[in-house]
Amino acid sequence: MALRMHPFLTVHVGDFLKTEIVEPTGMSIKALAEHFGVSRQALSTLLNGGASLSPDMAIRFEKAFGIKADTLLRMQTAYQLAQARRNEAQIEVKPLTRAA
Image (tube, rainbow, N blue to C red; front, side, top):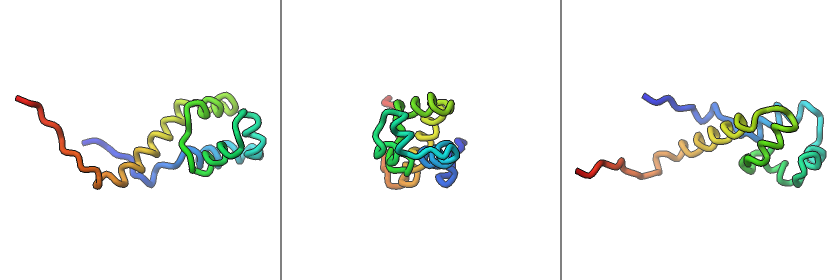
């Protein structure tokens, strides 16, 4: 039996980054965006859950804060899968069987 993570146990990686990494530093989104070399809007959208974390942005967080990009991207994938599972019943695909 496969174990599934309950959707309520997942958090958007942007929310995690905002509350656990960025806010404790006291750095503004504008200042961090400038440090990262990205637009304030792009960073804000990520941190407010409106965009997915890209590998490029994950590396920027890794370089700035030391949190592994791999870990952040796994968090992003877990969140997206949990969101998809919410609608799993509407995905109508029958199992494939081997041709004899």
